[in-house]
Image (tube, rainbow, N blue to C red):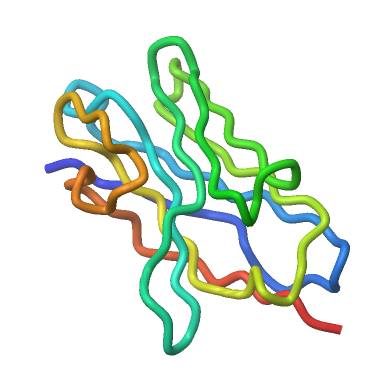
Length: 125
């Protein structure tokens, strides 16, 4: 059973930074990529970012491009999401997710078979 353990998040003022972490427990079962999604109150879950384990290619939603950076540590089976210049509209529960096998449509939640427990990010003055 693959488990994703998230950490990070919290409360920050607009313009501040936070870093999210996600560790995959069963390295041999991880897929080709990890994704970050978020869900704000009353809204659907949306894609934020994705990163491939091999090569490190990254993908971002337009709303976070230039402010968020995804990175990885293959040896630790860990991925990170550095969030800078945070805005109130970034407030949401953030989830990391692992693909099952080789997936190409990394912006779709259906590409991911394993999800972290979620962590709250609140941006407010």
